[in-house]
Length: 311
Ligand code: ADP
Ligand code: MG
Image (tube, rainbow, N blue to C red; front, side):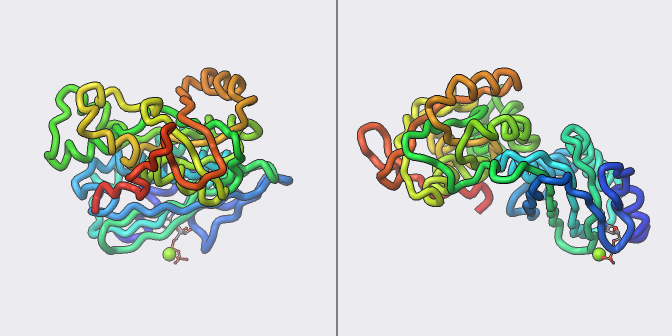
């Protein structure tokens, strides 16, 4: 099978939402008049971002999921994607499973794959995602305001526990399934991100760890935070593994939840929007003037740099 057969068989689908999709020198896209184009790229490198033996269908899912998560954190509606693939060899079983995982998530979010590039090389998966948002309403990192409540969606720490489990450092036992699902099949909070437009000020997706990612919002907004670490929603597995692995909740990456800030007056509307979507949202603290992330007693949290799962 040559490169063009491979592209045709595994990555070419009808793309009614594009003027022109896969097959020409470039795709043609018509942005909805009056909307802003939102663009983000995320690359997954074998051995760095995933274990080489990872199930290819899950990898197809995750390759797109991490990109959808970035658009969710902007409050954008995803529309199109391109895929740059480096493959060590043509493995049809792998390609078939990978594309199945990728297209299943793409279909769930109305995303069309409109182009890409395919080459031989060490396994490397790179998606560029494009979406739309109305002018001046995107959820930016630099928009947190003093007095804002800080919220987190879903629960944190499960993916980091799964990495430790896969490395053989801990045995999660009956809790392994839920944590591995977290790591391999993160659910990007796209609908929540869109619903938060007009309600939240700043947002980020938790990919590197809560303290690191919240830190990006605070730095870009030139503010600080006081948070209650016991309020942070954590994966059920922590009922067993709580005290020894607290760092996974604060600094574990790969959860792809949203962390966002909003004026306290919006709390009821935020809860209502999240409930309507079936997503949990939990307030964990407040934005303050003094830089850094502290607890109520004024202690600065130690793990402010992101935990790198695969370092
Ligand atoms: P070029 O030589 O102009 O770079 P390619 O031969 O690389 O074009 O690609 C041919 C067509 O297939 C292009 O439309 C490109 O966008 C698309 N394409 C290549 N690889 C992929 C892929 N992995 N997924 C989706 N589309 C792809
Ligand atoms: Mg090319």
